[in-house]
Image (cartoon, rainbow, N blue to C red):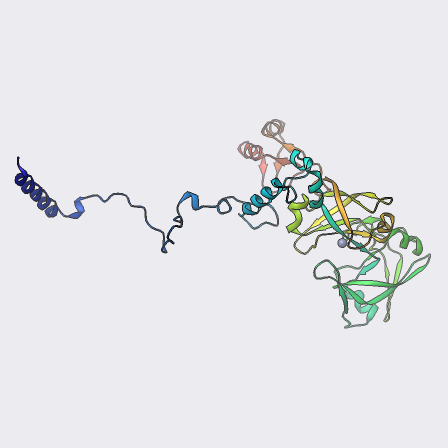
Length: 351
Ligand SMILES: [Zn+2]
């Protein structure tokens, strides 16, 4: 077969193929190009190297955007810590965290805000004390967003004495609450319990508020505010705390240094990070608003309690005893334990 024969043969094959039509040929797989023209040199959107973890890593951490973990931020923090240019992003107490105690310290510092005696008032009591239709006048904002000290003051009268010029903190709340220091309680001759703001079960009464327009006698609502740490969600990771935790803090200059235990952590979008102490506590440690305190220990508060962690084995044992488990119960379940409980038919979605 010479060159001409070969040429003739290839022309015949080409003619046959053309006659059969293009559809007879199965097109090879082609990866579709994504919409939009890729920039020269840029990785196509579908390339594995162009993906970033934040797009795939889900996050269930409160205060963080859903389904997004700031891996880029974590990488930067880890690299800075490795280069000793920033605090360790690792939780304190881990080997790496305690090895770098010097730099980790600043990561656990919080500013102190000293709370003088003050009154939160209900709308009804505002009307009684200052006159119907009277609104509270803001004097200056306090650190917690949206709250302010008012121009208005009241006189608080107790069995043992009275205190003039008690400042109100607005805006008006659902229920009137008077926050005093233990020394104030002694002045007034009352015994108020230590309570978290807003938890008024068992709070004291027996004081009278005197305003320019009238008086209100409180049956309850008088407390010594439990020392607490407001935490903005953005600071939760740095401080390693969550809402409901209890921490111990150290503050004060040499010679007056104190460690305060039972500091309740309150976290939420309306909170600014600040440790709230009353005047007595601040005087004992000789600290003032704006000084720094340092978190020295962390614990689980009442809300998280001491809920035991149940494993698959525990669930099987409980099921064998005829017990059932429910979401929100006084225990925590590993994911596998929950699946086991479902499979054994001893799981209820509602308590
Ligand atoms: Zn507070």
